[in-house]
Amino acid sequence: MRRFSLLALIVFSAVLLAPAAEARQGSTVHFDSTPGQGEGYLAVPVKAGKHPAIIVIQEYWGVNDWIRDQADRFVRQGYVALAPDLYRGKSTTDAAEAHELMRGLPEDRAIADLKGAFDYLAQRSDVDASRIGVIGWCMGGGYALQLAIAEPRIAAAVINYGHLVTDPTTIASIHPPILGNFGEADRGIPADDVRAFDAALKTAGKESNIKLYPGAGHAFMNPNNKGGYVKSAAKDAWMRIDSFFQRTLKRS
Image (tube, rainbow, N blue to C red):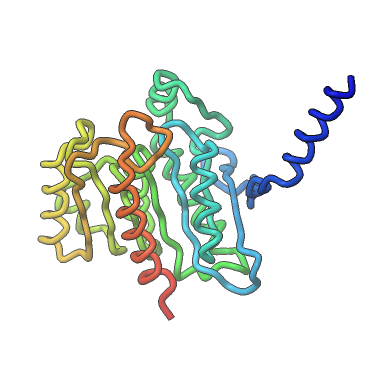
C-alpha cells in the first residue's frame, strides 16, 4: 500500500512539473451563409487593436486538431484566424469516409460558407478588412484558389497542393497575389498541371510564386501523413508562407 502511494505521488508530481500542453486558443463561432448558417473555429490574438486575418481551409478530413493547430499558429503571429467548418460539424480519421464527405460537399454551399467567413471577419472590430488572406491544404488548397477567384477583397492566397485551374477567363478573375506549394511526385495534382497553372498566371500578369518540391507527394506538409510527410519541404514551405503573409497582410 505504501509503495502504491509513493508511486502515485511520483506520478502526480511528474504531472505537476511537466510542461503544460498549450491551451487551445479559439472557440466555435457562427456566421451567415446559404443555406442556413456557417460555422468555424475562430482564434483571436490577445493584443488589442485591428489585426490582419487569415481564413484557414481544411483538408478533406474536416476541421480537426491539425487545422485548429494551424489557426492557433497564425494567432501567435498576430493574425485573427478563422477555420470555416465546410462539413458543418463532421470530421473523420478514415480516408474512405473523408472521400465521401468531400464528394458530398455541395460546392456552392462551400463557397457560400467561405464568403460568409470572409464577411464575418471583415465586420469584426478587431480585423482590418483590407488585410484578409486565405490558406488551404489538399481540398482546402483548391477552395483557397476558388475563394481568391470569387471574392475580390481577398488580399493574399496560399494554395498547398490543391486543385488548380488554367482557363484564361478564370485566371483573369484572380485578384490577390498567389503563393503555391506542391509536391513534384503528387499523383493527384500532377507537376505538369502545376507548371501549366504557373504559366497561365504569368501570361495573365498575375503576381505569383509557385514551387514544386522534388520527391514530395501529396500532403507533404502534414506530420500526421506518416507515409508522405517531408520535413525539409514542409519547413521550407512554412518559411515561404510566413514571409508571404508578412509581406502581403502585415504591410504598413
